[in-house]
Length: 290
Image 1 (cartoon, helix red, strand yellow):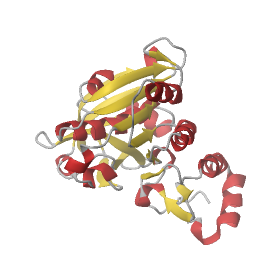
Image 2 (cartoon, rainbow, N blue to C red):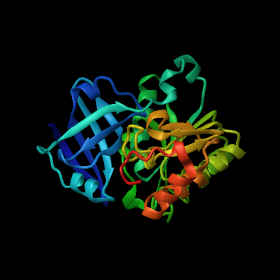
Image 3 (cartoon, one colour):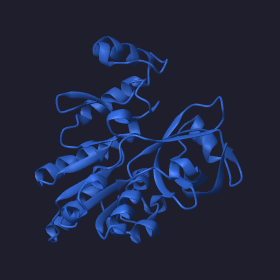
Image 4 (tube, rainbow, N blue to C red):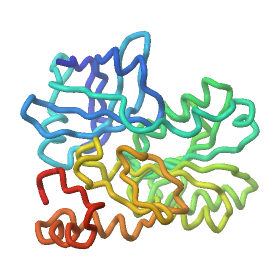
């Protein structure tokens, strides 16, 4: 059992928890994720690591209550326990493997949308700890849905933008990025994490601006071990699986339209049968739904 030490609601249906998991905290790196089960007979929930403290042996997660299991998770309080916390899984951010002195020469911008703000934070924090302060654009529909502003503000040059203009700058994250470039900001590298539609249009813009861009496909993961095939996507000319090959990929090579359409189809029985017939051996189908 893994004890929940802190639990609070960050925004409507978005919850933050600090969990005691010393072995995970001792080895995890920015970009990786966990598999959590609320109860021993519950479904597996893949969640990106939002923060970790090696000395205290804790990991921090942010979850949006959008289904039955995440709703059950959101109802847990400090003092409650999780049945399973497995990880770290997935590949760390490419940034942690780069030469620090070379990284210091780069101007890096992070673009976060919604709960995608959570996995952006540990990357900005890791860079800050190594003497690099990146720019970070956080987008939300309105002021009430902006999360982790204080934490990100402490480790990055933060720009908040809201769709309705109720807080910070006004407009989508793409508008904010274009505005910053027009104001004279230069970027050598971009990391975008959020809803797929957001990442698609960020990549469309960064391709025009000639900014290499990495995106995270953690939103489409289900099983988290490569067995179910739900997170199948095409990157360039290759079939990849977000949980084992990623979750981060070259955003300019990802076929977002295929991934979004596949996600919609995967939710229906007929859609799953169609994908099974179309994708053949690369379909997997190990989740038991196909």
